[in-house]
Image (tube, rainbow, N blue to C red; front, side, top):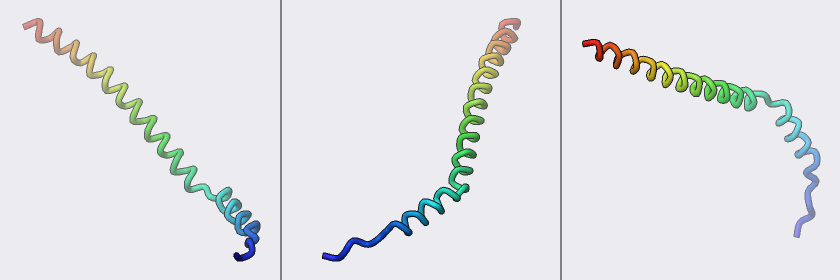
Length: 63
């Protein structure tokens, strides 16, 4: 069997580069913002749709 390699410096370099990387965090932040906006839009459209349905039903009832 071969001797166990010293992976200390490699692991430290990997952890240091991972800690300095910001693009992954930025992508996650943009994903959270996009998800929040889509939920807000869906809730707003649902509320507006219900209000419009009531208005149109009232208008049709007048004729």
